[in-house]
Image (cartoon, rainbow, N blue to C red; front, side, top):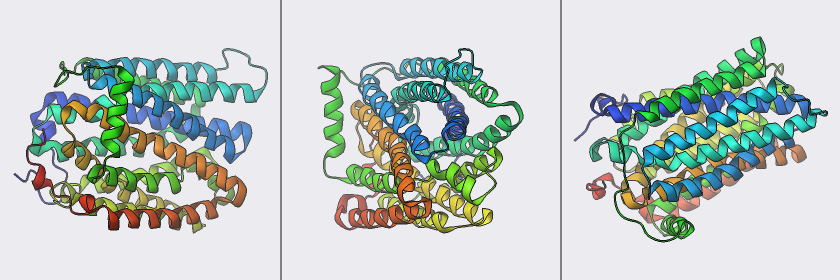
Length: 421
């Protein structure tokens, strides 16, 4: 059954499933908070240190803690009520972001500015830890809350909500920081997390689909084995890894903003928002993606466009070209993520979705953080343009290699997995 109308996003899951609507709203609130916190942390760290190595360290800390949280949360999601796991995660994130706001108010005199940066990094890590812990439950819940035919549309809607938050969040962060300071920005992020907590408190009980026995880390390791087996899922994850580890631009935004633009927080927010502009437009027309059968080919093509667009960003010298390149990259990223998410959720049995979704979150969230750390390190040695162009070229080679070698990904058809629920 084709649920989409033309190329526009299919809204049927929001109309037919109240529980999915609550999950969708919680995802938007979480994504909005993440964007506000990211811009505020990057701005603070750059203002204090003036070093791309330190802004890259933000990504490294987030990646490490997200990975740990996702590994733990993936195992928990397959043996516990996933709605309850999300409540624990939302409460932990709310406490961490509230701490960032208090630190920005300088409640405690830490003596040296760099000590404040270290506290900010620690609290950012706590926020990422709890975010990773809840991610597997959030990603695997649509398959339990929706009918099988609606799942690709539901994944597209979840991503569209995130893109909307990415569009509003960075721009709002720049305005809030410029007008009221860092503490107000962190406070707004905490308010968004409070809304997330309210939404997940209203989710129905979603107990595990089957019984799981064994130690928690044994279950996690079983999930890792599931992901690493040859097939479409491994190809989809590998494609995303090449694109994120080798060509992520966010850690370079403060450096590019200072070198090529005016260095103001407003333009820093515009650079991040421009990615969301392209992503939001692609999400609105996601009906053209979710009704396709060959999702593996779509993901590979979109990942290649992402790389080419960011190579263009690396060599651009004016604001319109910079923002245009980032918008194209955001559109390609949305298409790639929707295709990857549908492949993963369709192929994976529900009793393993929590752990496989944890791996997807590590790749989709921690992977970019590691990529940002790599970008900051390389840019500190050779400059931002070389970091973008060189990484983009290498990523294109890797994506092409997977597309040629992974026949399961290249030949993936939705119709072959009709009973995926």
